Image: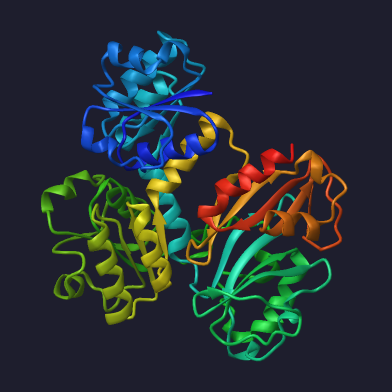
Length: 459
């Protein structure tokens, strides 16, 4: 396919890179030459310096023969105008736009432009994970096919138990074991240690295995036994209103997040060094406003950090966000913390700290790519502090009749579960794959493109 990416900021450059790695032709456009510098040195597409609103620039980029067009500048009016032009004037088959300000959503919807609201997307991801216990997280709820993927920390009552105790027939299966922030190989007799993190696939009946193993260390609010089965993994559905939450940074995401948390009955304080930004928040917001740097201890204390149940840093500065969540967790011992990350290159530092975060740039770029080119491998969720992605792909024809242990070993990935028709199956070693199966697996994000190349060769 021939794809044009209009706007080469963090999202646009990452999107262009992803699409090229999928094997498509890409032209990236930006009026700022420095913005094109965001593209990696290994980028094999083309780039043009020019104003995306000018027809001459779009024609030069090849819009008359383009199969797809992504409008991802920082300006909603520009994105709307060029997306509409690409669709109506140049008849581009697949057009998608980025929406920055939720207040402009009606304009996009009214004109029938397909879009992703980056503000709501990021805020909802933060909201869905913020109150989940650091010790037990429902990463994926696929009750419609009979399976869940959960991540939790090994507690005192399971210390020393064999890893095999977590795998129980067709009801539960241990997928991954992490110790001291590193994934370690394991067998049935590998002793578990308190503080280890594990990822498991479960059927409904598998919850009692986890509960027996974890005992009192398993968070009953995050993993409510078999009741959790069929409940959306959005933990706020099980969270009692009235928790005290501090939102650090009145960005578009911060303003929207503060509003929705407040509307759900939580006691919210919005903290930002620039009080003029508070006007971004809905007039229906009834929480507090506090002026101050989001990482300054005195400002955090003024905002009520000592009594807070949760703190989230969503300013437009990666450095400020990192300093803020470290202060909240390490100095004030806040139980639930989360940060927004802009630059994907910052992710390893959060992973090393074991700090929960959401990388909006990568998340939005992946969503846009999936809309444009229908990639072979689709990212669905992240585990182990984003060190691994849960991805989905179709069983390639050359795997038909192969056993799971053969296919997973060849692809160098860990199978989480297999969906055949309307049923989910545990990734047992001797399970025989069939064409038409949908496979969900755990993959290191940087190796997703390598997995795609492997699957393409097997078609």
